[in-house]
Length: 305
Length: 305
Image (cartoon, rainbow over all chains, first blue to last red; front, side, top):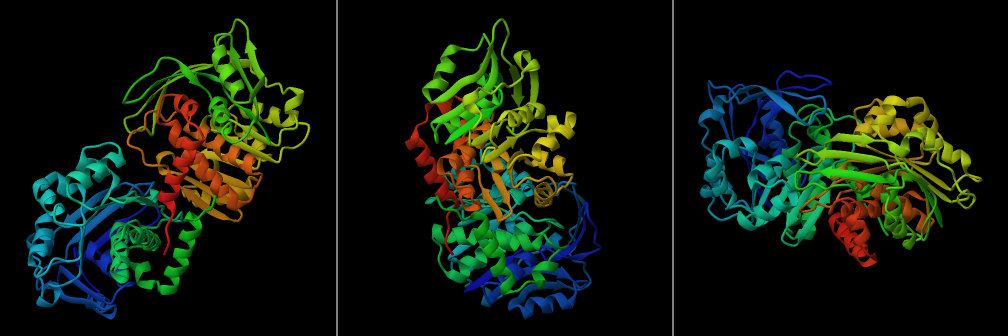
Protein backbone atom coordinates (compact mmCIF):
# COMPACT_ATOMS: atom_id res chain seq x y z
CA UNK A 1 0.00 0.00 0.00
CA UNK A 2 1.25 3.49 -0.81
CA UNK A 3 1.43 6.19 1.83
CA UNK A 4 2.18 9.81 1.08
CA UNK A 5 3.44 11.97 3.93
CA UNK A 6 3.77 15.74 3.85
CA UNK A 7 5.37 17.75 6.64
CA UNK A 8 8.68 19.28 7.63
CA UNK A 9 12.18 17.87 7.22
CA UNK A 10 14.38 20.02 9.35
CA UNK A 11 17.07 20.58 11.94
CA UNK A 12 16.28 20.73 15.66
CA UNK A 13 18.46 21.74 18.59
CA UNK A 14 17.03 20.43 21.84
CA UNK A 15 17.64 21.02 25.53
CA UNK A 16 16.13 18.74 28.13
CA UNK A 17 16.73 18.58 31.89
CA UNK A 18 19.09 15.66 31.13
CA UNK A 19 21.14 16.80 28.16
CA UNK A 20 21.33 19.03 25.09
CA UNK A 21 22.14 18.58 21.42
CA UNK A 22 23.48 20.70 18.63
CA UNK A 23 21.53 20.44 15.40
CA UNK A 24 20.02 17.00 14.85
CA UNK A 25 17.69 15.86 12.09
CA UNK A 26 14.06 16.60 12.87
CA UNK A 27 10.76 17.55 11.27
CA UNK A 28 7.30 16.00 11.30
CA UNK A 29 7.66 14.22 7.94
CA UNK A 30 11.00 12.75 9.03
CA UNK A 31 9.45 11.06 12.06
CA UNK A 32 6.32 10.00 10.18
CA UNK A 33 8.25 8.40 7.31
CA UNK A 34 10.93 6.69 9.40
CA UNK A 35 8.16 5.15 11.52
CA UNK A 36 5.75 4.17 8.74
CA UNK A 37 8.66 2.52 6.92
CA UNK A 38 8.50 -0.23 9.54
CA UNK A 39 5.10 -1.20 8.13
CA UNK A 40 5.09 -0.53 4.39
CA UNK A 41 7.59 -0.24 1.55
CA UNK A 42 5.83 2.27 -0.68
CA UNK A 43 6.30 5.60 1.08
CA UNK A 44 6.35 8.99 -0.62
CA UNK A 45 7.78 12.06 1.09
CA UNK A 46 6.75 15.64 0.27
CA UNK A 47 8.77 18.35 1.94
CA UNK A 48 11.52 20.92 1.42
CA UNK A 49 15.10 21.35 2.67
CA UNK A 50 18.03 23.64 1.92
CA UNK A 51 21.34 22.54 0.48
CA UNK A 52 22.67 22.28 4.04
CA UNK A 53 20.65 19.10 4.54
CA UNK A 54 22.89 16.01 4.63
CA UNK A 55 22.79 13.69 1.64
CA UNK A 56 23.39 10.82 4.05
CA UNK A 57 19.96 11.35 5.58
CA UNK A 58 18.30 11.39 2.17
CA UNK A 59 20.15 8.15 1.49
CA UNK A 60 18.77 6.78 4.78
CA UNK A 61 15.26 7.61 3.59
CA UNK A 62 15.85 5.87 0.26
CA UNK A 63 17.36 2.83 1.98
CA UNK A 64 14.05 2.46 3.80
CA UNK A 65 12.06 2.66 0.55
CA UNK A 66 11.02 6.23 1.23
CA UNK A 67 10.64 7.95 -2.13
CA UNK A 68 12.22 11.43 -1.96
CA UNK A 69 11.20 12.67 -5.43
CA UNK A 70 8.83 15.04 -3.66
CA UNK A 71 11.54 16.39 -1.35
CA UNK A 72 12.51 19.77 -2.81
CA UNK A 73 16.14 20.79 -2.26
CA UNK A 74 16.60 24.57 -2.48
CA UNK A 75 20.11 25.51 -3.61
CA UNK A 76 21.68 28.33 -1.63
CA UNK A 77 19.02 28.19 1.04
CA UNK A 78 18.92 26.79 4.55
CA UNK A 79 16.66 24.12 6.01
CA UNK A 80 13.95 24.90 8.58
CA UNK A 81 15.48 25.12 12.05
CA UNK A 82 13.76 24.87 15.43
CA UNK A 83 15.31 25.01 18.85
CA UNK A 84 13.52 24.38 22.14
CA UNK A 85 14.01 23.70 25.80
CA UNK A 86 11.88 21.21 27.71
CA UNK A 87 10.65 21.94 31.23
CA UNK A 88 11.67 19.78 34.17
CA UNK A 89 8.60 17.56 33.90
CA UNK A 90 9.20 17.10 30.12
CA UNK A 91 5.57 18.01 29.42
CA UNK A 92 5.95 21.67 28.55
CA UNK A 93 8.59 23.30 26.39
CA UNK A 94 9.71 26.76 25.33
CA UNK A 95 10.71 27.60 21.77
CA UNK A 96 14.12 29.28 21.73
CA UNK A 97 14.60 29.77 17.98
CA UNK A 98 12.42 29.32 14.89
CA UNK A 99 14.14 29.96 11.55
CA UNK A 100 11.63 29.20 8.79
CA UNK A 101 14.24 29.46 5.99
CA UNK A 102 13.05 27.26 3.07
CA UNK A 103 9.70 26.73 4.79
CA UNK A 104 8.79 30.42 4.42
CA UNK A 105 7.66 30.04 0.81
CA UNK A 106 7.23 26.28 0.56
CA UNK A 107 4.71 25.06 -2.01
CA UNK A 108 4.34 21.28 -1.95
CA UNK A 109 4.48 19.87 -5.48
CA UNK A 110 3.36 16.28 -5.93
CA UNK A 111 5.23 14.21 -8.53
CA UNK A 112 2.83 12.34 -10.85
CA UNK A 113 3.67 9.03 -9.21
CA UNK A 114 2.44 10.33 -5.85
CA UNK A 115 -1.03 11.35 -6.95
CA UNK A 116 -2.76 8.01 -6.44
CA UNK A 117 -1.42 7.17 -2.98
CA UNK A 118 -3.99 5.23 -0.96
CA UNK A 119 -3.04 6.78 2.39
CA UNK A 120 -2.27 10.41 2.99
CA UNK A 121 -0.65 11.71 6.15
CA UNK A 122 -0.82 15.48 6.47
CA UNK A 123 1.85 16.27 9.06
CA UNK A 124 1.75 19.41 11.16
CA UNK A 125 2.25 22.31 8.70
CA UNK A 126 0.22 25.28 7.46
CA UNK A 127 -3.36 24.13 6.71
CA UNK A 128 -3.10 25.93 3.34
CA UNK A 129 -0.34 23.54 2.36
CA UNK A 130 -2.25 20.53 3.70
CA UNK A 131 -5.20 21.59 1.56
CA UNK A 132 -2.99 22.07 -1.50
CA UNK A 133 -1.75 18.48 -1.18
CA UNK A 134 -5.30 17.11 -1.03
CA UNK A 135 -6.20 19.15 -4.10
CA UNK A 136 -3.26 17.81 -6.10
CA UNK A 137 -4.30 14.17 -5.64
CA UNK A 138 -5.76 12.49 -8.75
CA UNK A 139 -7.99 10.27 -6.64
CA UNK A 140 -9.27 10.69 -3.11
CA UNK A 141 -7.05 8.60 -0.80
CA UNK A 142 -8.78 5.84 1.15
CA UNK A 143 -7.68 7.45 4.38
CA UNK A 144 -6.53 11.02 5.02
CA UNK A 145 -5.06 11.63 8.48
CA UNK A 146 -4.15 15.09 9.72
CA UNK A 147 -2.00 16.37 12.55
CA UNK A 148 -2.06 20.02 13.58
CA UNK A 149 -1.40 22.26 16.58
CA UNK A 150 -2.68 25.25 18.55
CA UNK A 151 -0.52 27.64 16.48
CA UNK A 152 -2.70 27.03 13.39
CA UNK A 153 -5.87 27.35 15.45
CA UNK A 154 -4.64 30.76 16.56
CA UNK A 155 -3.68 32.15 13.15
CA UNK A 156 -5.54 30.27 10.37
CA UNK A 157 -8.71 28.98 12.05
CA UNK A 158 -10.97 29.07 8.98
CA UNK A 159 -8.53 27.30 6.71
CA UNK A 160 -7.87 24.68 9.39
CA UNK A 161 -11.60 24.01 9.78
CA UNK A 162 -11.87 23.72 5.97
CA UNK A 163 -9.14 21.09 5.74
CA UNK A 164 -10.46 19.22 8.79
CA UNK A 165 -13.75 18.89 6.90
CA UNK A 166 -11.98 16.90 4.19
CA UNK A 167 -10.16 14.29 6.26
CA UNK A 168 -10.93 10.98 8.00
CA UNK A 169 -8.68 10.94 11.06
CA UNK A 170 -7.60 13.92 13.14
CA UNK A 171 -4.82 13.67 15.71
CA UNK A 172 -4.27 16.47 18.22
CA UNK A 173 -3.29 16.74 21.86
CA UNK A 174 -5.65 17.23 24.80
CA UNK A 175 -5.22 21.00 25.07
CA UNK A 176 -5.72 21.39 21.32
CA UNK A 177 -8.89 19.27 21.46
CA UNK A 178 -10.24 21.62 24.11
CA UNK A 179 -9.26 24.69 22.07
CA UNK A 180 -10.75 23.31 18.86
CA UNK A 181 -14.06 22.32 20.47
CA UNK A 182 -14.25 25.02 23.14
CA UNK A 183 -15.13 22.24 25.62
CA UNK A 184 -13.37 21.36 28.91
CA UNK A 185 -14.19 17.66 28.95
CA UNK A 186 -12.32 15.51 26.41
CA UNK A 187 -15.40 13.37 25.89
CA UNK A 188 -17.55 16.40 25.08
CA UNK A 189 -14.73 17.75 22.91
CA UNK A 190 -14.62 14.50 20.98
CA UNK A 191 -18.39 14.42 20.48
CA UNK A 192 -18.33 17.94 19.10
CA UNK A 193 -15.35 17.40 16.80
CA UNK A 194 -16.84 14.20 15.40
CA UNK A 195 -20.45 15.39 15.08
CA UNK A 196 -19.94 19.01 14.10
CA UNK A 197 -16.64 19.07 12.21
CA UNK A 198 -17.07 16.02 10.01
CA UNK A 199 -14.12 14.03 11.39
CA UNK A 200 -14.85 10.29 11.48
CA UNK A 201 -12.07 9.38 13.88
CA UNK A 202 -10.37 11.52 16.48
CA UNK A 203 -7.20 10.63 18.34
CA UNK A 204 -6.41 12.73 21.39
CA UNK A 205 -2.74 12.44 22.37
CA UNK A 206 -2.00 12.94 26.06
CA UNK A 207 1.78 12.46 25.95
CA UNK A 208 2.98 10.43 28.95
CA UNK A 209 -0.69 9.82 29.82
CA UNK A 210 -1.45 7.84 26.66
CA UNK A 211 -3.87 8.34 23.78
CA UNK A 212 -7.64 8.16 23.34
CA UNK A 213 -9.33 6.98 20.16
CA UNK A 214 -12.86 8.27 19.52
CA UNK A 215 -14.92 6.73 16.72
CA UNK A 216 -18.60 6.33 15.84
CA UNK A 217 -18.30 2.69 16.98
CA UNK A 218 -16.75 3.43 20.37
CA UNK A 219 -13.89 4.71 22.44
CA UNK A 220 -10.51 3.08 23.11
CA UNK A 221 -7.49 3.97 25.20
CA UNK A 222 -3.81 3.07 24.88
CA UNK A 223 -1.41 4.02 27.69
CA UNK A 224 2.06 5.37 27.16
CA UNK A 225 4.69 2.85 28.24
CA UNK A 226 6.15 3.88 31.62
CA UNK A 227 9.87 4.33 30.97
CA UNK A 228 12.76 4.74 33.37
CA UNK A 229 14.03 7.71 31.37
CA UNK A 230 12.26 9.92 28.85
CA UNK A 231 15.20 11.40 27.06
CA UNK A 232 13.59 13.67 24.47
CA UNK A 233 9.86 13.91 23.64
CA UNK A 234 10.50 15.68 20.30
CA UNK A 235 8.77 13.90 17.44
CA UNK A 236 6.79 11.50 19.62
CA UNK A 237 3.46 12.74 18.23
CA UNK A 238 4.65 12.45 14.63
CA UNK A 239 6.06 9.01 15.35
CA UNK A 240 2.74 8.01 16.87
CA UNK A 241 0.93 9.19 13.72
CA UNK A 242 3.36 7.36 11.44
CA UNK A 243 2.89 4.16 13.44
CA UNK A 244 -0.89 4.46 13.50
CA UNK A 245 -1.33 5.12 9.78
CA UNK A 246 1.49 2.76 8.83
CA UNK A 247 -0.31 -0.06 10.64
CA UNK A 248 -3.64 0.79 8.96
CA UNK A 249 -1.93 0.85 5.57
CA UNK A 250 -0.17 -2.46 6.18
CA UNK A 251 -3.31 -4.25 7.34
CA UNK A 252 -5.68 -2.46 4.92
CA UNK A 253 -8.40 -2.73 7.56
CA UNK A 254 -9.97 0.59 8.59
CA UNK A 255 -12.45 -0.79 11.13
CA UNK A 256 -12.62 0.57 14.67
CA UNK A 257 -11.42 -2.82 15.94
CA UNK A 258 -8.28 -2.64 13.82
CA UNK A 259 -7.71 1.00 14.73
CA UNK A 260 -7.32 -0.18 18.34
CA UNK A 261 -4.30 -2.18 17.26
CA UNK A 262 -3.04 0.82 15.29
CA UNK A 263 -3.29 2.95 18.44
CA UNK A 264 -1.17 0.43 20.34
CA UNK A 265 1.41 0.29 17.53
CA UNK A 266 1.53 4.09 17.38
CA UNK A 267 2.10 4.22 21.14
CA UNK A 268 4.78 1.53 20.96
CA UNK A 269 6.73 3.36 18.26
CA UNK A 270 6.42 6.64 20.16
CA UNK A 271 7.87 4.92 23.23
CA UNK A 272 11.04 4.22 21.24
CA UNK A 273 11.21 7.76 19.88
CA UNK A 274 11.53 9.35 23.33
CA UNK A 275 14.37 7.06 24.43
CA UNK A 276 17.07 9.03 22.58
CA UNK A 277 17.59 12.46 21.01
CA UNK A 278 15.84 13.15 17.72
CA UNK A 279 15.16 10.15 15.46
CA UNK A 280 18.24 8.25 16.69
CA UNK A 281 16.32 5.37 18.27
CA UNK A 282 13.90 5.11 15.32
CA UNK A 283 16.89 4.62 13.05
CA UNK A 284 18.27 1.89 15.33
CA UNK A 285 15.27 -0.38 15.98
CA UNK A 286 14.24 -3.43 13.97
CA UNK A 287 11.14 -5.61 13.63
CA UNK A 288 12.07 -7.77 16.60
CA UNK A 289 12.46 -4.71 18.86
CA UNK A 290 8.99 -3.56 17.82
CA UNK A 291 7.45 -6.97 18.43
CA UNK A 292 9.01 -7.12 21.90
CA UNK A 293 7.71 -3.66 22.75
CA UNK A 294 4.23 -4.59 21.51
CA UNK A 295 4.34 -7.62 23.80
CA UNK A 296 5.09 -5.28 26.71
CA UNK A 297 2.03 -3.20 25.78
CA UNK A 298 -0.11 -6.34 25.74
CA UNK A 299 1.16 -7.19 29.25
CA UNK A 300 0.48 -3.63 30.43
CA UNK A 301 -3.10 -3.63 29.11
CA UNK A 302 -4.42 -7.21 29.13
CA UNK A 303 -6.54 -8.54 31.98
CA UNK A 304 -9.33 -11.00 32.66
CA UNK A 305 -12.10 -10.89 35.23
CA UNK B 1 -14.09 -12.26 54.09
CA UNK B 2 -13.71 -9.59 56.74
CA UNK B 3 -12.29 -6.18 55.89
CA UNK B 4 -11.40 -3.59 58.49
CA UNK B 5 -11.15 0.03 57.35
CA UNK B 6 -9.74 2.88 59.37
CA UNK B 7 -9.87 6.50 58.25
CA UNK B 8 -11.94 9.63 58.64
CA UNK B 9 -15.71 9.97 58.76
CA UNK B 10 -16.40 13.63 58.34
CA UNK B 11 -18.16 16.59 56.79
CA UNK B 12 -16.91 18.25 53.60
CA UNK B 13 -17.96 21.47 51.93
CA UNK B 14 -16.88 21.53 48.32
CA UNK B 15 -16.65 24.11 45.56
CA UNK B 16 -16.02 23.10 41.97
CA UNK B 17 -16.14 25.19 38.79
CA UNK B 18 -19.63 23.73 38.25
CA UNK B 19 -21.31 23.97 41.64
CA UNK B 20 -20.88 24.11 45.41
CA UNK B 21 -22.28 22.26 48.42
CA UNK B 22 -22.87 23.02 52.04
CA UNK B 23 -21.69 20.29 54.39
CA UNK B 24 -22.00 16.81 52.88
CA UNK B 25 -20.84 13.51 54.34
CA UNK B 26 -17.22 12.79 53.56
CA UNK B 27 -14.09 11.17 54.95
CA UNK B 28 -11.75 8.49 53.65
CA UNK B 29 -13.33 5.63 55.65
CA UNK B 30 -16.78 6.63 54.43
CA UNK B 31 -15.79 6.25 50.79
CA UNK B 32 -13.76 3.09 51.42
CA UNK B 33 -16.57 1.33 53.30
CA UNK B 34 -19.42 2.37 51.02
CA UNK B 35 -17.42 1.08 48.06
CA UNK B 36 -16.10 -2.15 49.58
CA UNK B 37 -19.67 -2.97 50.68
CA UNK B 38 -20.42 -3.71 47.03
CA UNK B 39 -18.06 -6.68 47.26
CA UNK B 40 -18.25 -8.10 50.78
CA UNK B 41 -20.69 -8.22 53.69
CA UNK B 42 -18.28 -8.31 56.62
CA UNK B 43 -16.95 -4.77 56.89
CA UNK B 44 -15.68 -3.14 60.07
CA UNK B 45 -15.30 0.60 60.38
CA UNK B 46 -12.88 2.32 62.77
CA UNK B 47 -13.19 6.09 63.02
CA UNK B 48 -14.49 8.95 65.14
CA UNK B 49 -17.30 11.51 64.78
CA UNK B 50 -18.93 14.14 67.00
CA UNK B 51 -22.55 14.10 68.10
CA UNK B 52 -23.35 16.33 65.13
CA UNK B 53 -22.97 13.34 62.80
CA UNK B 54 -26.33 12.15 61.47
CA UNK B 55 -27.69 8.91 62.80
CA UNK B 56 -29.22 8.29 59.39
CA UNK B 57 -25.74 7.91 57.89
CA UNK B 58 -24.70 5.44 60.58
CA UNK B 59 -27.91 3.57 59.75
CA UNK B 60 -26.89 3.63 56.06
CA UNK B 61 -23.57 2.03 57.03
CA UNK B 62 -25.33 -0.67 59.05
CA UNK B 63 -27.82 -1.32 56.25
CA UNK B 64 -24.83 -2.16 54.06
CA UNK B 65 -23.41 -4.60 56.64
CA UNK B 66 -20.78 -2.11 57.73
CA UNK B 67 -20.12 -2.74 61.42
CA UNK B 68 -19.90 0.59 63.26
CA UNK B 69 -18.90 -0.73 66.70
CA UNK B 70 -15.49 0.83 66.09
CA UNK B 71 -16.96 4.23 65.19
CA UNK B 72 -16.45 6.38 68.28
CA UNK B 73 -19.13 9.06 68.83
CA UNK B 74 -17.84 11.91 71.01
CA UNK B 75 -20.63 13.61 72.91
CA UNK B 76 -20.48 17.40 72.92
CA UNK B 77 -17.84 17.45 70.18
CA UNK B 78 -17.93 18.18 66.48
CA UNK B 79 -16.96 15.94 63.56
CA UNK B 80 -13.89 16.59 61.43
CA UNK B 81 -14.67 19.23 58.79
CA UNK B 82 -12.81 19.99 55.57
CA UNK B 83 -13.66 22.55 52.95
CA UNK B 84 -11.94 22.95 49.59
CA UNK B 85 -12.19 24.57 46.21
CA UNK B 86 -11.20 22.76 43.01
CA UNK B 87 -9.33 24.54 40.23
CA UNK B 88 -10.83 24.94 36.78
CA UNK B 89 -9.17 21.78 35.45
CA UNK B 90 -10.42 19.78 38.51
CA UNK B 91 -6.91 18.43 39.06
CA UNK B 92 -5.67 20.81 41.72
CA UNK B 93 -7.54 22.11 44.74
CA UNK B 94 -7.09 24.60 47.58
CA UNK B 95 -8.05 23.83 51.15
CA UNK B 96 -10.28 26.59 52.51
CA UNK B 97 -10.98 25.23 56.01
CA UNK B 98 -9.69 22.34 58.10
CA UNK B 99 -11.35 21.87 61.50
CA UNK B 100 -9.86 18.78 63.12
CA UNK B 101 -12.41 18.73 65.98
CA UNK B 102 -12.75 15.10 67.19
CA UNK B 103 -9.82 14.07 64.99
CA UNK B 104 -7.38 16.15 67.04
CA UNK B 105 -7.05 13.51 69.77
CA UNK B 106 -8.40 10.46 68.00
CA UNK B 107 -7.10 7.09 69.23
CA UNK B 108 -8.48 4.21 67.21
CA UNK B 109 -9.72 1.45 69.51
CA UNK B 110 -10.44 -1.92 67.89
CA UNK B 111 -13.38 -3.90 69.28
CA UNK B 112 -12.40 -7.55 69.99
CA UNK B 113 -14.45 -8.75 67.01
CA UNK B 114 -12.33 -6.62 64.66
CA UNK B 115 -8.94 -8.02 65.63
CA UNK B 116 -8.86 -10.97 63.27
CA UNK B 117 -9.98 -9.23 60.10
CA UNK B 118 -8.33 -10.76 57.03
CA UNK B 119 -8.02 -7.50 55.11
CA UNK B 120 -6.96 -4.19 56.56
CA UNK B 121 -7.39 -0.88 54.77
CA UNK B 122 -5.47 1.96 56.41
CA UNK B 123 -7.13 5.06 54.97
CA UNK B 124 -5.33 8.38 54.78
CA UNK B 125 -4.78 9.47 58.41
CA UNK B 126 -1.79 10.08 60.70
CA UNK B 127 0.74 7.23 60.26
CA UNK B 128 0.89 6.93 64.07
CA UNK B 129 -2.78 5.93 64.06
CA UNK B 130 -2.29 3.58 61.12
CA UNK B 131 0.52 1.91 63.08
CA UNK B 132 -1.60 1.69 66.22
CA UNK B 133 -4.29 -0.20 64.29
CA UNK B 134 -1.78 -2.73 62.96
CA UNK B 135 -0.45 -3.23 66.52
CA UNK B 136 -3.93 -3.89 67.92
CA UNK B 137 -4.61 -6.78 65.53
CA UNK B 138 -4.49 -10.26 67.10
CA UNK B 139 -3.28 -11.81 63.87
CA UNK B 140 -1.50 -10.29 60.92
CA UNK B 141 -4.08 -9.63 58.20
CA UNK B 142 -3.56 -11.42 54.90
CA UNK B 143 -3.37 -8.07 53.13
CA UNK B 144 -2.67 -4.63 54.57
CA UNK B 145 -3.23 -1.76 52.15
CA UNK B 146 -2.29 1.82 53.00
CA UNK B 147 -3.22 5.17 51.53
CA UNK B 148 -1.38 8.33 52.51
CA UNK B 149 -0.55 11.79 51.19
CA UNK B 150 2.20 14.40 50.85
CA UNK B 151 1.12 16.08 54.14
CA UNK B 152 2.37 13.06 56.16
CA UNK B 153 5.57 12.92 54.13
CA UNK B 154 6.18 16.53 55.11
CA UNK B 155 5.51 16.23 58.84
CA UNK B 156 5.94 12.59 59.99
CA UNK B 157 8.34 11.08 57.47
CA UNK B 158 9.98 8.55 59.83
CA UNK B 159 6.72 7.18 61.17
CA UNK B 160 5.30 6.95 57.66
CA UNK B 161 8.33 4.97 56.48
CA UNK B 162 7.93 2.69 59.51
CA UNK B 163 4.30 1.89 58.75
CA UNK B 164 5.02 1.50 55.03
CA UNK B 165 7.51 -1.20 56.02
CA UNK B 166 4.69 -3.25 57.54
CA UNK B 167 2.17 -3.27 54.69
CA UNK B 168 1.58 -5.12 51.42
CA UNK B 169 -0.01 -2.57 49.12
CA UNK B 170 0.67 1.15 49.01
CA UNK B 171 -1.56 3.55 47.10
CA UNK B 172 -0.44 7.13 46.46
CA UNK B 173 -0.70 9.63 43.65
CA UNK B 174 2.00 10.40 41.08
CA UNK B 175 3.37 13.50 42.84
CA UNK B 176 3.49 11.62 46.14
CA UNK B 177 5.33 8.72 44.52
CA UNK B 178 7.94 11.19 43.29
CA UNK B 179 8.21 12.82 46.71
CA UNK B 180 8.45 9.50 48.54
CA UNK B 181 11.14 8.10 46.21
CA UNK B 182 12.88 11.35 45.30
CA UNK B 183 12.73 10.19 41.66
CA UNK B 184 11.21 12.03 38.66
CA UNK B 185 10.25 8.97 36.62
CA UNK B 186 7.30 6.95 37.93
CA UNK B 187 8.97 3.73 36.87
CA UNK B 188 12.12 4.55 38.82
CA UNK B 189 9.98 5.71 41.72
CA UNK B 190 8.14 2.40 41.72
CA UNK B 191 11.36 0.37 41.60
CA UNK B 192 12.72 2.27 44.57
CA UNK B 193 9.54 2.06 46.64
CA UNK B 194 9.21 -1.68 45.98
CA UNK B 195 12.88 -2.60 46.39
CA UNK B 196 13.96 -0.23 49.13
CA UNK B 197 10.83 0.33 51.21
CA UNK B 198 9.53 -3.21 51.47
CA UNK B 199 6.23 -2.63 49.67
CA UNK B 200 5.17 -5.64 47.58
CA UNK B 201 2.63 -3.81 45.46
CA UNK B 202 2.46 -0.14 44.57
CA UNK B 203 -0.50 1.59 42.98
CA UNK B 204 0.16 5.04 41.58
CA UNK B 205 -3.07 7.00 41.09
CA UNK B 206 -3.02 9.58 38.31
CA UNK B 207 -6.57 10.90 38.66
CA UNK B 208 -8.15 11.50 35.25
CA UNK B 209 -5.08 9.83 33.71
CA UNK B 210 -5.72 6.42 35.28
CA UNK B 211 -3.76 4.21 37.65
CA UNK B 212 -0.57 2.15 37.43
CA UNK B 213 -0.04 -1.10 39.29
CA UNK B 214 3.57 -2.10 40.01
CA UNK B 215 4.30 -5.59 41.32
CA UNK B 216 7.25 -7.99 41.35
CA UNK B 217 5.49 -9.94 38.57
CA UNK B 218 4.89 -6.97 36.29
CA UNK B 219 3.23 -3.67 35.59
CA UNK B 220 -0.39 -2.98 34.63
CA UNK B 221 -2.36 0.11 33.72
CA UNK B 222 -6.05 0.96 34.03
CA UNK B 223 -7.37 4.17 32.45
CA UNK B 224 -9.88 6.48 34.06
CA UNK B 225 -13.19 6.38 32.21
CA UNK B 226 -13.54 9.51 30.07
CA UNK B 227 -16.71 11.22 31.35
CA UNK B 228 -18.75 14.06 29.92
CA UNK B 229 -18.78 15.77 33.31
CA UNK B 230 -16.55 15.28 36.33
CA UNK B 231 -18.71 16.78 39.01
CA UNK B 232 -16.59 16.38 42.16
CA UNK B 233 -13.32 14.44 42.47
CA UNK B 234 -13.51 14.31 46.30
CA UNK B 235 -13.19 10.76 47.58
CA UNK B 236 -12.25 9.23 44.22
CA UNK B 237 -8.92 7.92 45.58
CA UNK B 238 -10.58 6.38 48.65
CA UNK B 239 -13.31 4.89 46.48
CA UNK B 240 -10.64 3.45 44.23
CA UNK B 241 -8.92 1.86 47.26
CA UNK B 242 -12.20 0.46 48.59
CA UNK B 243 -12.99 -1.05 45.21
CA UNK B 244 -9.50 -2.52 44.79
CA UNK B 245 -9.30 -4.14 48.22
CA UNK B 246 -12.99 -5.09 48.22
CA UNK B 247 -12.45 -7.02 44.99
CA UNK B 248 -9.35 -8.76 46.39
CA UNK B 249 -11.28 -9.69 49.55
CA UNK B 250 -14.25 -10.97 47.57
CA UNK B 251 -12.15 -13.13 45.24
CA UNK B 252 -9.57 -14.13 47.89
CA UNK B 253 -6.95 -14.21 45.13
CA UNK B 254 -3.93 -11.98 45.75
CA UNK B 255 -2.03 -12.80 42.55
CA UNK B 256 -0.80 -10.08 40.21
CA UNK B 257 -3.21 -11.36 37.57
CA UNK B 258 -6.18 -10.90 39.89
CA UNK B 259 -4.91 -7.51 41.06
CA UNK B 260 -5.30 -6.35 37.44
CA UNK B 261 -9.03 -6.99 37.75
CA UNK B 262 -9.03 -5.24 41.12
CA UNK B 263 -7.42 -2.19 39.49
CA UNK B 264 -10.19 -2.09 36.89
CA UNK B 265 -12.89 -2.46 39.56
CA UNK B 266 -11.28 0.29 41.63
CA UNK B 267 -11.23 2.56 38.58
CA UNK B 268 -14.84 1.73 37.73
CA UNK B 269 -16.07 2.57 41.23
CA UNK B 270 -14.05 5.80 41.23
CA UNK B 271 -15.72 6.76 37.94
CA UNK B 272 -19.08 6.67 39.72
CA UNK B 273 -17.81 8.63 42.71
CA UNK B 274 -16.90 11.71 40.64
CA UNK B 275 -20.30 11.89 38.92
CA UNK B 276 -22.01 13.61 41.85
CA UNK B 277 -21.12 15.56 45.01
CA UNK B 278 -19.71 13.57 47.93
CA UNK B 279 -20.78 9.92 48.20
CA UNK B 280 -24.19 10.57 46.62
CA UNK B 281 -23.60 8.40 43.55
CA UNK B 282 -21.99 5.60 45.58
CA UNK B 283 -25.15 5.44 47.68
CA UNK B 284 -27.29 5.24 44.53
CA UNK B 285 -25.61 2.55 42.42
CA UNK B 286 -26.36 -1.18 42.42
CA UNK B 287 -24.66 -4.33 41.15
CA UNK B 288 -26.07 -3.96 37.67
CA UNK B 289 -24.72 -0.40 37.38
CA UNK B 290 -21.29 -1.67 38.37
CA UNK B 291 -21.40 -4.55 35.89
CA UNK B 292 -22.39 -2.17 33.10
CA UNK B 293 -19.54 0.19 33.96
CA UNK B 294 -17.07 -2.70 34.07
CA UNK B 295 -18.24 -3.68 30.58
CA UNK B 296 -17.45 -0.15 29.41
CA UNK B 297 -13.95 -0.51 30.84
CA UNK B 298 -13.48 -3.78 28.98
CA UNK B 299 -14.52 -2.03 25.74
CA UNK B 300 -12.16 0.85 26.46
CA UNK B 301 -9.18 -1.46 27.10
CA UNK B 302 -9.62 -4.65 25.08
CA UNK B 303 -7.98 -5.11 21.70
CA UNK B 304 -6.56 -7.83 19.50
CA UNK B 305 -3.73 -7.71 16.99
